[in-house]
Length: 231
Length: 292
Image (tube, rainbow over all chains, first blue to last red; front, side):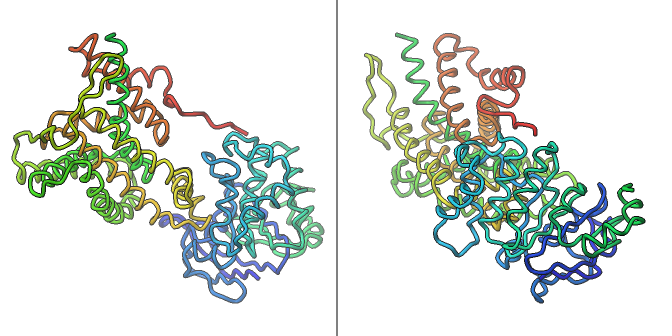
């Protein structure tokens, strides 16, 4: 569903990504692991179109999406949830409403109700400013908005960032509930997310060092020790 | 009696000051820059009203509507011209200050060439002339007529911002332009339109500034920009409703100063900025975001 091959990119003239290659299948959850500064977030930004692709291939369902602007990629079915994931100055409901901008479905109200059903705590705070919510609730708003936009693939940039372990587990549980209905690419440095992953890619120094199943990753002690200090 | 006069008069004038400042706030929201030429756009609005009245006998009330599409288009095109350069600049804030300072100088020079350096004014007879009498005190027609025109204008603007889909997109871009882009919003187009609306609101204020300030001249821009800046800092940068409320509060303060300490009244904008910075730097209606 998403094919990335020998992708390079960077900020200005500074190269950050040297060779990113990975493949994500439909309805799969892939966790892109890497330490701080490895290039995970940069890769997601290139994929959604916030940063230019210097070279390499970026295909979605066989279509080359590299020349498309951000809005066109969104229209094409690519969703993105940034680390912040919300508009802090807008209410919870307004945040969710923005998710429906590019969808063809008319019943925005029904879609928002579905999100409230899934995340009841958001319904109670529907009129509150998203910036005033707890870190965990903010992530739920971001996930909710992303789901309303009905993406075929949702790219998530560090959904655990800024969260206490309790909230991290809650976010993981909520993401697990989405399994089978959406393709997720989650950039993370928190290995707890492997519990919901089908496949793993490891990025280090702007290059893909490993891509494969979770069990292959778990069986590769050298890789785990080299990149994450896990014995 | 004097106190009531100052407060009611302050509210009427404050509605004008709200419009005067809200355009600057809008441009700040659209591009995160302070438009140093804001007062000059207001000045152009004043000359527009003067020209329309003297050449075509068009009432300033109608001029308020006529200047809107012209200045929206001007602001939109200007935004499309400068925004890409600002995005690419290593120091966009400094570049924008230099750019708008230059624009201010150019507008001033052109206004002097076209209209001359003498102050131009509009006869009060160009609008309804009866005084408003409240609690035994009379208020000039220019105060209440301007308030009567500006209130629906601000109401339409607020409805646009808070009750329409494009208004929601505008607020999303203001809140986080990158997040807006990935939500599928065409941030450049939305920013451009909003920037143009900021110019239009400034020009509308200019039409009524001819009455409130007693005339229009090419050099008035800088002082107006400072007043508008003081109001938006007071009401919280980027906060539209805060700016409107701050404009009204400013009007009351200014009028109280005019009544009780007239020789000090021109210090009100500066005192307001200093007091805001010392007591509540985030502005009267600003808030701090919850961390974690």
